[in-house]
Image (cartoon, rainbow, N blue to C red; front, side, top):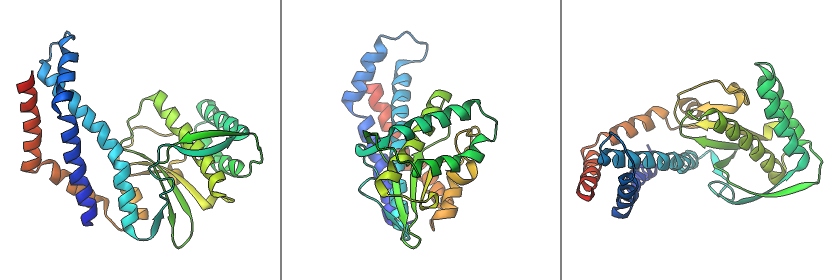
Length: 265
């Protein structure tokens, strides 16, 4: 792998450990668990809480990692104006807002294959919208990049794992489609094939089917995305992560974190 990719992974792991293992953070968790009745020893509950915090941080880090990997490929231009920004200013028409909500509702009550037959038509309707009754919104974009040769834009909503509960899963898909609507207006998109929205899961795991998005065209999981878009092999990233997790120096950092918890509690 490119040295910048491995360096980013190494740096992120160390930073997550440093942030999670601060004396102040451990002390706060110690006070919190002092007031809880539980059969699990307090030090293990604190350690578990810190691991969960790192897991959440790692999910956020995946966005940065994917941006760097796409950028390093050489065939794409990452649109820095929007990618990774948490407060982009966008406009959404009232018609498109209602149109997307209606589509989500129809997916929930419609026939099993509804999204496969209707999703492209939804995108065409969003692009063709002429309603000038616009809402101004602040919104985050995980990753937006453009193929330098074809000029096609790709919008990625990046998730670490396909393991969200039902309520959150609906919101993820609604947000994903509305972000597409924001971008079509912002970028002046005129055809469906000029901007491809992709819900991307870093892991290959598929928990359940998605009734809101066509799996074949608008969802990519781990290896499938790497094979289609990147010269870097998914297997190489996977192997590096596994090797990193078992390095003696990495294990030592986790052992030291636990010992810090023991000393504090």
